[in-house]
Image (cartoon, rainbow, N blue to C red; front, side, top):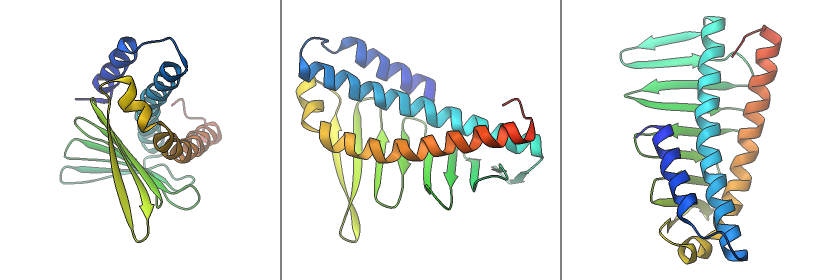
Length: 177
């Protein structure tokens, strides 16, 4: 399953959810944010690959390709069909596009978005505690609403930083990515 297919599944889920009432509105908004996150990760990987290609900063080893954007500590890579983007320095994080999921993680939190569930990870002591939420009905999603929103808020900040840095880098190099 590609990012587009995962996005399609999430959009189908949004269409099937009720639209009336506060609970329904919050749930639809949350699932929309998950779908938006999938799109933003996919687009950021594509822009990073494009910038690396424009600058000629690609390295290949076996079945792996590393794309160095040369700006803001942003890298992208593909290995065994798994696309990744990561940032070092400020707003450090990593994101992966898997066959059937999108995973994003930093030092404190993480999220795995799948067609039928969302798994969040939150730092608890020395390790991250995982909490799965099935995307089957409004009550199930609503029960995990606040924890998922907390994780999304932190990870969306990293994606905003990457998008801004990639746009700035593209303007500086004159790349049409």
